[in-house]
Image (cartoon, rainbow, N blue to C red; front, side):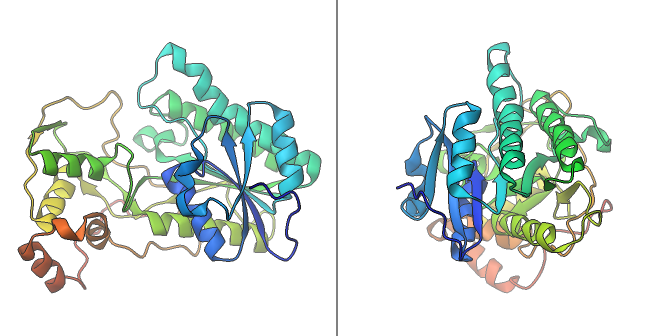
Length: 332
C-alpha cells in the first residue's frame, strides 16, 4: 500500500534495489531502527521478494521516466536516498548494454536531478571494488564496473554544487544466510547437495568477504556521518572491507570443515576470467565502522544447522572464540 503522506516524526529513507539481497536487508534494518521506508522498484520487479517488509514500506513503481521519480520523491519526502539498484554482469552482450547503462547511470542521475529540484540533501551510493582493477584509482574490471565508475564521477559533480551531500560505499564480496544469488556459498551448497563435480578456476585469487549484517551497518554508519560531519571532512568514497583476505581454495576448505561435507571441486577446471581480480583493492575504510562477524562465524550462519555433521558442530563449539581468517598483508 502506498502512503501519500510522510510521517514527519521519523527519519525517512527512499531505497532503490530493495528486492535485491543487500537492499532488502537494509530496508529491514531501517524499519527496525524506526525509519519510515519507501522503496523505488521497476515496474516488472516482483514485490513478493520484499517478504515480510510488504505492508510496512511504501512502494513506488518506476517506468524509466524522470517524472515518476520526481513524483516518488515528492510523496516520500526522504531525508536520505540509499541507491543500491544496479544491473550486474560479469560479461556483457551488445543487447544488454542499454539496460546496464540505464540502470547503473541514468536512474542515479534522475534521482540526483529530482533531489536537487526538491531540496533533498543526503545520497548514499553503492559502488564496487571492481572499479579498481590492479588497485588503481580508476581501472574498471568490466563494463558493469565502468558504468559504476561513470556514475560515481557524475555524483561528484552534483556533490560539488553543495546542494547534495553524498558518499559512495564500495562493496566487496557480500554474503549471508538466505542468499540465492549465484555467489560462492550458494555454489558450494548446490555442489554439496548434488555431489557433482564443480569446475572452478585454479583458486589462488584472494577474496574479501563481508557479512550481510556488517554491510548493512556500513550504510547506517554512512547516513550518520553525512548527517553529523561537517562538509569537507569526508571523502567521496569508502571501502566496506573486511581487511582480511583468503584464497578461494582456503574458503572452500573452511566451508568443508565447518559443514562436514565434501566439495568435489575440480581446481583449474576452468580458466581465470579475463581481468580476474587476484588481490582485492585497498581503499579507505569507512570511519567508525568495523566488521563484527568474522568469516568462520559467518559461514556457520550460512550453513543450515540440519546440514552440519556432529563432528563439525563439535569443532565449531570448540573454536567459537577464535578467528580463522588470518590477517592479510594488505590491511587497510
